[in-house]
Image 1 (tube, rainbow, N blue to C red):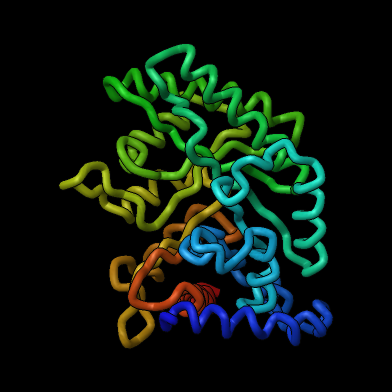
Image 2 (image 1 turned 90 degrees about the horizontal axis):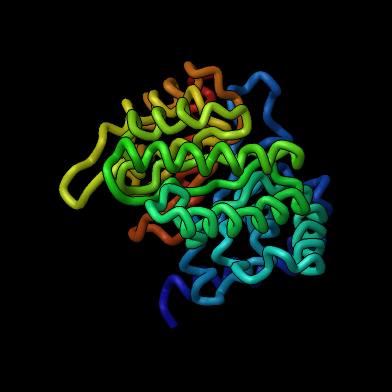
Length: 306
């Protein structure tokens, strides 16, 4: 049995004892935090993608892990872990019920592999929009504030931007009566160019359309990377969520690729005071330990900013 497997089984073995503890007595990170703190911390499901993909962790239990293992009270789901359940009312009801039972709020669903909103083919773009509608409905059922989408596409950058903006505006109009937002992450290709994605936002010009700036997704090609601090600064005026990407940490607990204090000063300077989602993608630490290291760093930075 691998070390990571033993660690995860050890973690899940403790769930029986933890479940006996009332959620009201769990010292959650947010419950104990003064209201004056500049942001709250949540957990993105992708942080546990290896455990989920290997079936060591079930999607239904993610909110439980967030609360009982990491003492966090808000999560961001990823549609790939319940891909065929977008319109399964019974499944969604149970998913929300489980999160509610642990006092965990479901903030958003990250949507992948549902077509390109900037597709050069009009029919393909229409299918992509329709494919995302089912996730708006699921997000409404789960009590989310947003779905996170991608602005993929092809062709000249200007034309790609115009098509993506049009699709986003259409989705924003569909999301409005559901009291939901449609937010775009810098997630490879042109979207990892902060100036390009900011231009898409200005073109879409819809109050329900915004961004989810990710600290680490600024690789625009195999050989080029956009300046992450500049990119986050360009995307924050449109931000309705923030993703604290992490990979590794030095001996002082600092993320090795991103200066979190500098980054969070940009976030705070934009007037953002919502949740900042932990998204650990490293390999040296286990998923559990990487999440905890990211959480400690965010809490330290938050204290400095407060």
